[in-house]
Structures are given as structure tokens and as C-alpha cells.
Image 1: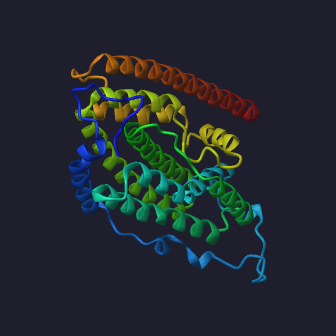
Image 2: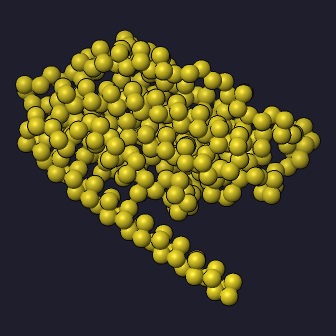
Image 3: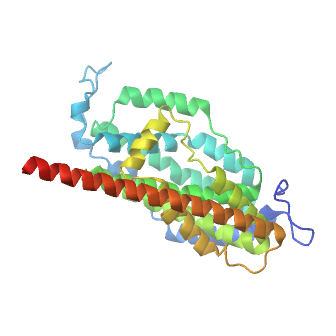
Amino acid sequence: MSDQGSCAAPVSRRTDLLADLEPIVAGGLDRHLAAAQDWFPHQYVPWGRARDFDGPLGGEGWQPGQSPLSPVVRDALLVNLLTEDNLPSYHHEIASRFGRDSTWGVWVNRWTAEEARHSDALRSYLHAIRGLDPVELERSRMAHVSAGYVSGQPTVAHALVYVTIQELATREAHRNAGVLCAEPHGTRLMSRIAADENLHMIFYRDVCAAACDLDPDRLLRAFADVVRGFTMPGHRIPGFAARAARIAAAGIYDVALHHERVLLPLLRHLRLMERTDVGPAGEEARERIGHLMETLEDKARRLRELRERMRHTGRQSGATRGA
């Protein structure tokens, strides 16, 4: 599959990124398999805390007071789980984009197999601890998965950049939800899932780096486009906007984290702003990236200032009540 479209390379560049990158994919897959650890979802679920729900088994219906999780952690884990639930659409996306033949297909299938563990483990955990309303969760899952998912990325270069950013963002979202979870089994599970996402990010990041060596102008243009329009794959989850706002307010995933712990590390690793082998199209893309990063940095700064004012106000209110 050739990578044609708005990011078409200069005549002097090779244009079939999938074929050109296949040796890199083969090496990345070998490294991934050497680093990946087997783990088993059933070992991360506190089954001894589980009991029957209402329905055919005649158990007890779910009540909010049964959950050991704070409301914002419930928001985060619901979004994380429903995002993982849409794996059939994600598999279709990357299999259609990267192909199911050769080493690309081996990677796509391996990635899918590893990702499938995440929803299995997380749903079992939440049911066992009665962390979320299981009826709301299932209705939301049906709505979200029924809607499907289309990334909208126009070229292979765009798709590579998107999955690299998305995997790192997902790692951060899972890890931070686990830290805030304050429930040891949940913290352990989210850390385990985040470790998988980190290895997936490293694979895609290395492929992106090789693609940038092949055609820096094309990758720079794709990076600028994806950063400008980036949305998480779960953005169509019912009630996503309100939940995302609460998740951001809690510091689980917000614009500051997206800027400082996702985009900046990737820019540094890929050296996109430092390369000397770019043409006019690459320079234009770099200028766009610079403006986008400045805008995000300004938003992150204002968010930090707002939170500091809120903390200061809270301290003053506490002192007044204690006086």
C-alpha cells in the first residue's frame, strides 16, 4: 500500500513507506517480543470480593456506595475501559492501513492479542469490586462499540504519527488513573496495562523515527496535521466531554500533561525540530508545530496558574474555618 495524498514526498524520495519500513518493523517486532512479558488477566482480579448481581442469579443490585473508587476515578476507568472495548474497530483500522501480510500483519495481530487483555482484565476487576454500575457500563459499551471508530488519518505517515502519540497518551491516562485509584488491586492492574501501552508506543516511535529518516518532510507534515487535530480514540463515548473535563480537573489527563509528557518527549526523541535535511515543506510544517506547541504551552501555563489559585483559595478557606 503506497502512502500517497497530501503528504506526497518529493520525486527524489521513495514513496512506498510500508515496503521501505518493513525491515524496521521486523526488527521492532523482535525487540518487542523479547521485552514483552506474559501476564494473565485472571491473576489481577480480586475474585474473592465478587458476589452475584441482581438478575437471573438473584443477587444484589449495584449501588454507588458499594464502590471503593472516587467519582473521578470511576469516570477515568469507564473511559479507559470503553476505549479498550472498541478493539475490533482499531484492528480493522490498522489492518486496513498497514496490511495483514508480511511482518506488518504479524505485528498487527500481536498488538491486537495484547490489547484484548486490557478490556478483559479491567472489566473483570470493576465487576469484582463493584466499582461501576454494570448496567450503565454495558449500555455505554453497546452504544460506543456499535458506533465504530474511524481514525480519519489520510496517509500511512499520518497513521503512524497518530498511533505513536495515542499509545503514549493512553499509557499516561492508564498510569495516572491507577495512581489516583487508591485501591491497590486497581493500581497494580493499571500499572500492568500501562506497561503494555509503553511497549506499543516504543514500537511505533521507532518506526516513526525510521520513516522520518526516509522522508523527513512527509513525517513533519503528518506530525503537524495530527497534533493540530488530535483526539483520543474514545472521544465518541457517551458523556465523554463531561467526563474528560472531570478527568482533566483531577490531573489524570489534561492539556499540560499532553504537552509536557506526550508531545515534547516525542519531539525530542524524533529530533523533528533539529533536523537539517528538510525541504521547504518540512520547514513549513516545523513552523506549524512550533506555533501549536506554543499554544499548548500557554494553555498548560494558564491551567497551572488556575489550579494554584484554587489551592490558595482552598488553603485560605481552611484557615478561616479553623480560626
